[in-house]
Image (tube, rainbow, N blue to C red; front, side, top):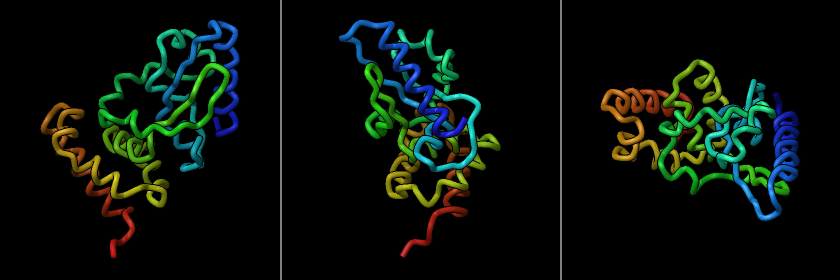
Length: 173
């Protein structure tokens, strides 16, 4: 799926929700992973599905009908706790407001994941990153230790982050 495919699925889910739920219902969905990066045109590849980190439980039965993966809650531990505060509105429909996690939160989650595809995505992102925000998030030792839940996880993250920073951070003045 490319950007237009993702947007079409978001719109179709919104239309379905509009038929399914009463007029007063309003939902929000937070998209992460490759789908979020594609929506903001940070990466050029396609994705197989749309990873949904957060959605109202009433929408969960509908997500898979539109190639949305609502089973990524286990990955919530790859995001700083206040990621919702930095979420970016992508599109508002009749029933659903769609957000993505911020680019910096997505970078943190991809470094935590360390899958080959995640590392490939990181190479395309560096020019768009707010490096001061990313540093603030990545270097908050207390928070990173909490979300990674082990000393080993934290040390692995720090090593990966430092490697990412060495490779992709623009030179400081």
